[in-house]
Image (tube, rainbow, N blue to C red):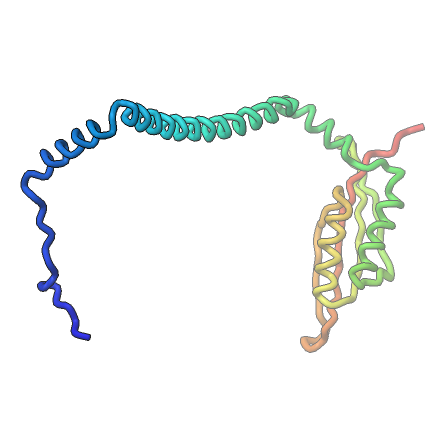
Length: 198
């Protein structure tokens, strides 16, 4: 099969009197069809236009309905006033666990250690009173021997399980480089409300 050269393609030539011929042909067809057909075609075109306009309005209504629903949900959410310094301090004290909850907090800490694969052999507990503060700092020192990943899991798990527990310091020591276990000295501070006087 021979390839066709682009120069060999026939060129489309339009008649120079195309516009007047189309106008004449349109008038002739309208005369042949009659006024009823012309009215029917006009009605069909109006119906298509009305349908297109209705579709546009429906899409616009859907968008506006979504915006109104979002505005209604936003208006239904109660407005919280901006926190003041006094309100923030009061909320902080209310958030702290009671002094009587210290044993439960320590049990939760031991539970997190066991889940992390760490055995707590001993611990030091020391309450630190601050006359100016309305809360008690309960310092917890834990010597731990385990692999680094377990210690890291324990630290993250403890801080997530006890929201008022803070990590004060952690020190790592390894006897030999080849050893998989490390000696870690972890110091937590547990914040609790001061003991109520009776």
